[in-house]
Amino acid sequence: MMKLKIFICCILFSFSLSTIAQTKLSFEYYCSDAVLETTQVSVFIESSNNKMELLNNDTIREFEKSLNIPAEETNYTLFVEFENTTIGKETLIYPFALDGNETNIEINVRFSNYNIYDKKKRENAQIDIVKYYESNLDIEIQYLPKMKGEDIVGPFFRLKNNSNDTIYGKYFNHFWGSISFLVDSIWGREIIGTLDANVVIGSPLFPDSTAIATVGTWGWSDDLPKLHYKYTLLYTTRKNNLNQEKKNFVWRAGTKSYYRLVYEFDVE
Image (cartoon, rainbow, N blue to C red; front, side, top):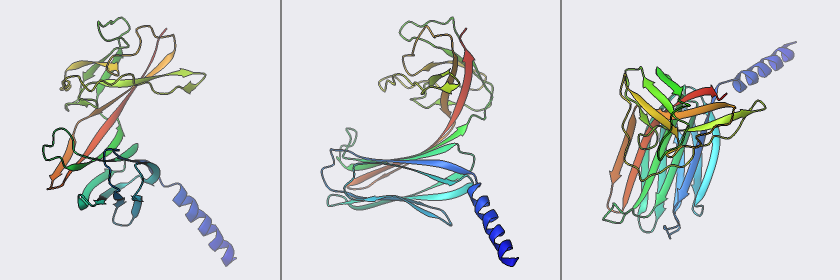
């Protein structure tokens, strides 16, 4: 009887562990081909009770990895280390926090030689921690079927910010979203369209103001088939960046939080 009770308790404990809420974390690493040297890279994250290795290699140039972490309020520290003969050993220790409400998280690490803005021609690393959430602000969105553009095609959407926060589009402050449509109860892939990095920085959307949102930079189509659609817009309200410049190396690290505004509509 005692053995049976122990067995049942073990089953219940295992079940409780499996039902703990999880959040998907995606990691991407890229090393530019312009970096000719073999570079040892080590990346891991650590909390008070857990340590997870994301990468430890000296030959790879591109790498992706996905894992699940507990969906809970936690303080983490990201450790990134590069080592080659030019820079020696360089380490970034970057703290970040999760509140447990993220829908998913990305950690992106990019290592490259100097960029055109660095007169000292130092190698550099760009670190981005990106947290995604469901939209929690009062933002009205409406499809504008009769609106036509000159250089930009549709569809167009009207945004109205009824919150007390100023919001910024993910792409250079512009409100460029993605669109997908429903066929046989299945959502198709999200179409983002073209993203033009040469445009001027867009204007934020202030409280009690309106703006026009599109699909990508140049739109998608003025003539939408008669289907059920989903438009998804990413926006942010805050950013946190850290730059560290050294003799032979430049660290650029930032934490960004994006909110997904999802809007479904019909074309009849």
